[in-house]
Length: 205
Length: 205
Image 1 (tube, each protein chain N blue to C red):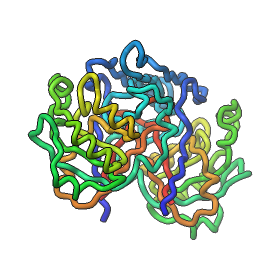
Image 2 (image 1 turned 180 degrees about the horizontal axis):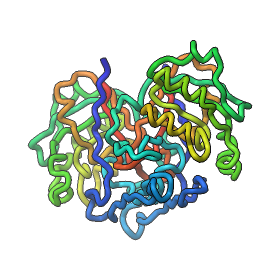
Image 3 (image 1 turned 90 degrees about the vertical axis):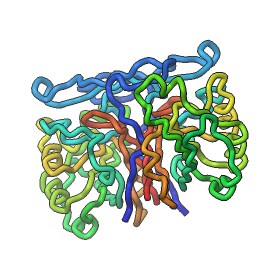
Image 4 (image 1 turned 135 degrees about the horizontal axis):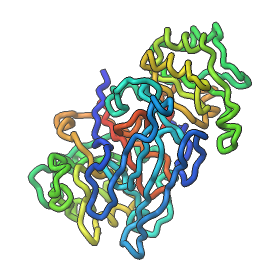
């Protein structure tokens, strides 16, 4: 029996965004009674909520997210429990857990703070040794329940981008995968001519 | 070997929209050189490009698309070749082809006209007998490469909505599924508090 778990935050009006980013507007602009149909309109930056970063976000690479191969966005998932680590470090045991082409998810539980100021200002970061491990393992994508794997000047971001590893940021509900041995991640972004995209991330068990 | 086929139109600046709808803006608002990162911002109505309609679009039903069960958006696909039909009618052979819970795709090839005025003004429509057949078969979703299954007053839309059948509109590339016996459709919308959503629709073969 297939079970589907939603790993995405909700897109709502005035949702939390990174301090760098402009706010999100989601509003109804057509109404059944007056216009004969309901319609909502959205104004959003590509890094609000659960989204995928591509190299173009922080480099001069000119490949838009709609040009990236579809099989990048679907594949075997792998969850690492990294709660209580402010600097998420490499551990030897990861060698046996992580395989080439995995979509690796780091469960920090920081998504509990989503909606507070602390969520964007005091999140865990990823150690470079761990980043290098993921690069050497040739993982497909890294998914995190924090807004960024690092802080300015975003060296870890760039390490991943230099090796074409995309990053899914602001994930949630990763606790639900804690004791699941085998699952698939489905995270197709919009087919959009941009350097990143909102995404619905689903785990299929 | 898994093959993935993209059935979605591109989201670009000033893309084609229904004559009722406001235009789409997609623009870069942050630039690597000046801002230290690239960022795009999108302003879009929920019915631009490839998207999923829910009952709330044309009825007083107050269930937003982010509240709809995930398994609605993934499942066995079924393609019907309905090219050259201005009014897409029921055919007896469909009884053997369409099964309960299928995501049924109608291939009209009208997507060839996407980007012309004719695309929105002269598209094929679905006969009520065929709509009733889909309702009786209890299909999960209907996917079409036209902007709407009907015209004002949208009776076919409402028939589907009264039976909780969602509609994927403005699909493309359906020709690639013509001789494929077995495929799955993956079409998770954004987790958005709206009556419809842009969607990346993928066929997995």
